[in-house]
Length: 343
Image (cartoon, rainbow, N blue to C red; front, side):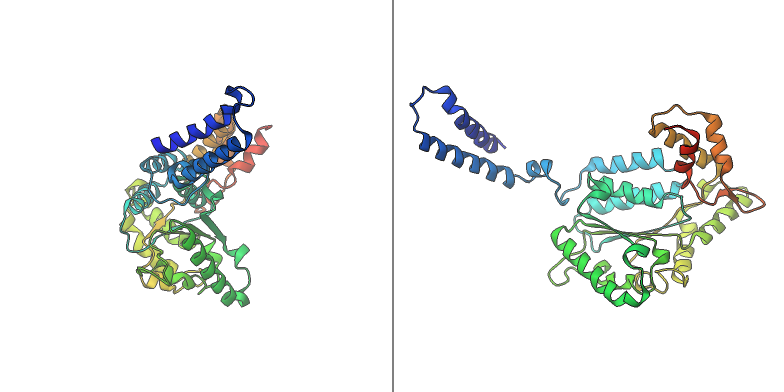
């Protein structure tokens, strides 16, 4: 770093030289050539020093910042409610993978649950823990099934395009993040086209995919998750008593056999290439109120508990008799706040 600073100082000195010497004392052409040479040297030093260059420009992640895991944990603890399994599994999975310098395959997480339970939020937080620009990073790639793959008759075209996109982006940045939303609406068989990239190959056509991360979001399996949660509730046990082992295998089987899911009979599941099936539990009344409070605070307003309760009361809950879980989670909280506050 001392060499870089010396080069920069030399360039600055040459720029100031004409101002510090008597007129005519320095020959203009010589000064111009000297300044150009020093500037070129300084620029070369700037570009060749990766950490300095990446301070000003976004770079592909090559070395994990340990502070990112703490930020990931903090964001999930403070802004994700009622999802103890998610917070625990996601942090450990992502942190462990990023710290592993000899991963045998890419990290593949499949997030399942009803709408409004936090799946998109978690994928956003994971992206931000790896790249400062988060979802806006050029190394983070989002696919929405109904937008990017709408027509069943074009599935072969989509397969080719998806493979080319993943291959091209991982070639540029090994630590690329791919997020597939609405997996429950994706045409069956399409996602299997990326199977080679998630497998245990060291290289495919000279490219390694072992540092990449794949996150899948789906409503499929939500019924099975609710079934387990209700069983615990009816037996007088809290949702925090639910462990991943109580639900993960049943969830993967449910998704695999769901004909309305993009994972229907998928080789990604059959070959055990999904590392974690992560259940998002349905949200209760108290969790909806937490969401409302956080949203009010994020807008810079004092929390009015009367409004918090009124918004939570307006939500619809299921099952019909017990009315335990919000059928939209926290998804409509933002819109309802617009009604109560004159922002």
